[in-house]
Image (cartoon, rainbow, N blue to C red; front, side, top):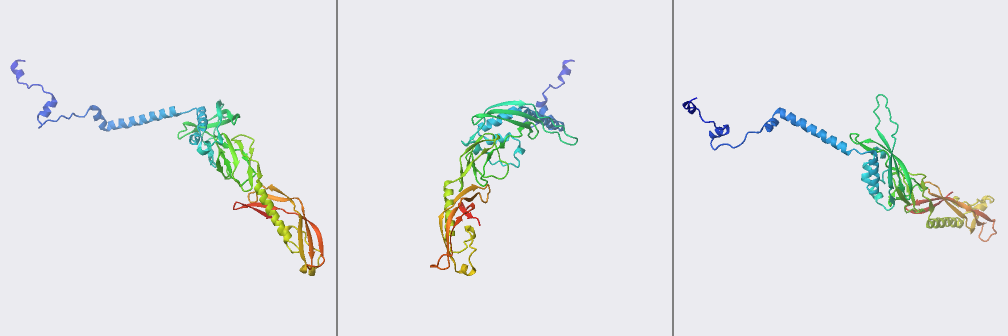
Length: 368
């Protein structure tokens, strides 16, 4: 090519400059990059949605794999929570259905933090062979996988052992939960209406099975108008049960004796020939009708009966009393104040009945 031909071609200029040269002031914005352009398109949005789903799956898998614990770890964490006196953390490791229809009033921080509660210590765990698997019939759901862990430790200064069953739980069946964390509290008492003080917390029986966390509990009888008892230490989930031995309060017994004597004095003060039925005095059957109309009785207690007070085990009448050794009462019957006595004899004096608590007060009810 000669020089004249080359001169007829315009010089090469970058496209951006040519585009800006014909616009007043010029624009310096760059066009969108390849990645942004792809993402703005329909195919790009599909790629973005697929990537988000994949990321969610990966994160979920990481959470499940890293959050999965062995049965031994769950049991160890449970007893660590009891040692830390954290009821909420302990309950998180227990299958929720375990406490359905149970009285869970004592599964609280207040109980665990009381000086009257002692958690198990020196915990050692042993993985045991899993329970025999269940092969469901056609149409049944497969039974949840289970594990069994034996717990050895010390409780209230003595060796302690129990076995814990675990099963798969959680929203996806991805974690182990205990199928029997809370246990029964083995305390018996003949006082059915009394309030117990369990690890410093008042507890009124509800009629449902009571469950508590494993440990040792100091149990006492709350203030009661009739009874008292020495505190006992009960080991939850252990046998035999501990008996809370009650006895009648000394001041209550004095009040019972006082009211019985007032009742007997009222019987002796009666001027009727045949005393009221609650007095349990012998009827006079040898007088004529005319003599009965005119007769008046004079009675004097020469010896009061000895009374035995016993627990009945009932709610309405927690105590009963009966004559242990009869007393004596002299009976004189005359038809006139100055006349000779028609009857002059000594009778046996007995008494029985029940003792109630009415409005917090002791009330004696002599029997007919």
